[in-house]
Image (cartoon, rainbow, N blue to C red; front, top):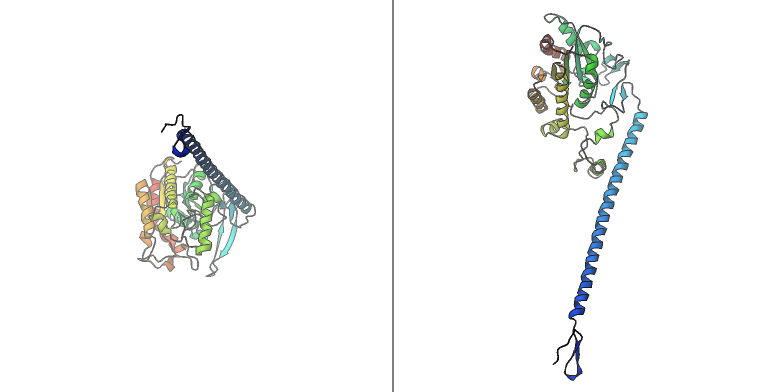
Length: 382
């Protein structure tokens, strides 16, 4: 048998011929390998292109959705009409009270009539005299500080001012009622930041209420506030719609939206983003006052909608707020300590749930010596 040379062919008995593929096979395998690599590369390129295209589509969809929500909110601002609330589209306050409003109200459920008057600065009470030599106190807060449901002579800032003017305190003070119904702690910080230098107080007081970590609900919410704690507005919206239509609003999917909670306690004790932001706002307020040498007093109100005895559900919130005050070195007065075990009906506006004049009278008696001590201590506020 002769050996084939060059991989051509070899003769076998009976005239059979066999071809050698040693060289041709290598070439064929090389071609197949190159073709396979080319196919894999093409597939990988297609996958990358698909991923990039999908990502760009999502980015565009997110941008369009945000623009859509913003346009809707701007339309709401344009057509907003309310006798009390004035929307502020370019301010972190979101809204303010309309200056000069004088209005009589009635609590529908009980028929109780009450009235309020706003000054030129848009706050309840008489005009502010910043040229006065009286000791000036800023009382920042929400509807509790404002005195929703009671007349001017019954609100806490006014009763406290009257009490300080008498025996044994004899302090000639002006307490500016900066309460804005519906405000939360973040808005209250922005308000204080805007007015503290304008009014140059000798003391700042903040009224904290159990829902102060929740977003405001008095005017149409700004989209950037609603979606404050999420990366994708569109994804959060889709989750929200899924919960609403598929589970009748039950939060099966966590949306992360900044919405009012049914359970105020959970957002605080679980250290949710709302409470983290609220703590920071409290810290910023105290720091703002401290940087100007102004004392800062935190007043913690209980919820007068609840029984003020062992059934009271918001003690964990009181504990967390007071713990923050101790950590921050801030003077805090928790009114629950003085009002507990008293029938809530005695202290709330009938048919409404806000504290009434009697509740504010008791609160003023508790706060007067604390405020007196703060005002008697020299400060660099003015």
